[in-house]
Image (cartoon, rainbow, N blue to C red; front, side, top):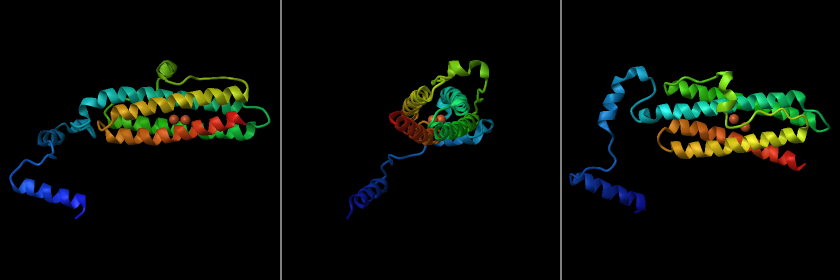
Length: 192
Ligand SMILES: [Fe+2]
Ligand SMILES: [Fe+2]
C-alpha cells in the first residue's frame, strides 16, 4: 500500500472512532460570508488583511506607472547604433508594466479599495525611480536597477502575503516572473 493510501486509512479510522478531524472549515466565517455582501469578493478569510494589502498594492501600482513613464521616455529618446532594437524593447517593457498596473488596479478594486492613480504623489510612492538619461548605456542601467528593485519588492510581498490572500499572491507571482525576464534581458544588453 502506498504511504498516502495508508494515511487515508488511518484518517478514516480516526474519524470513524469519533475523533475530531484536524481539517475543518470555519462555519462562523462561512456564515459571515453570506452576510456582508456589500464587501463583494472580500470574505472573512482575506478581510483582516484586505486594507493593508490594498496599501501595498497601491505602492506597486505607483511603481508600475513610473516604470511605464521611464520606459516610454527611453523608447522615444534612445539613439545610437544598437538603439532601434533596444528602443523597441523599451516599448515592449512599457506595455508590460502598463498591463501590470491594470491587473494591480483591478485587484485593488476587488479587495474593496481604491486604486491611486494620482500623478501628484506618484514618484514619492513608487519604489523605483524615474530616469531621463541621455545615453543608451545609462538608460539600460537605470532600467536594470528599477527591475531589480521590482524583483526584490515583489519577492518580499509574495512572502509577506503567503496564504493570507492567494489570488493576490498568484498575481504578484505572475508579475515577478515578468520582472525577472525584464532584468535578465537588460543585464544581457549591459554586457554587449
Ligand atoms: Fe511591472
Ligand atoms: Fe519590468
